[in-house]
Amino acid sequence: MKKKRNNQLKKKIMHRNKLLLRRVMMNNGKSIVIAASSFGQGSRLKHTTNRNSVRQLPQSSFEEDKV
Image 1 (cartoon, rainbow, N blue to C red):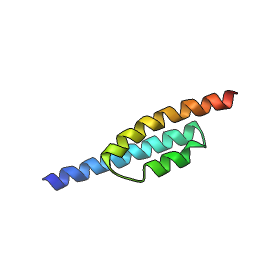
Image 2: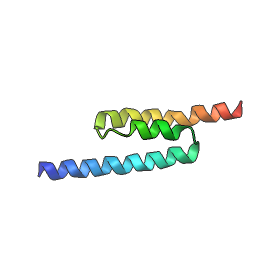
Image 3: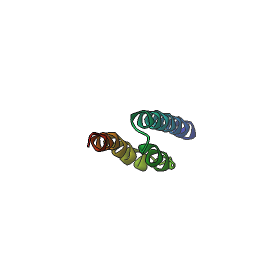
């Protein structure tokens, strides 16, 4: 039972990572590398911290483009 739940969590996290990666790629080309490297690990702690950092990335890059 516990094993099954772990697998479901892993699948959810992996799916969410893919969605985030796709979203970052659409926003700007530079952040692809950062997102891809940070999502290499499947641990939940790193996943949550990375999700927050990825959200901040596109905004800063857009500001650079305007200058």
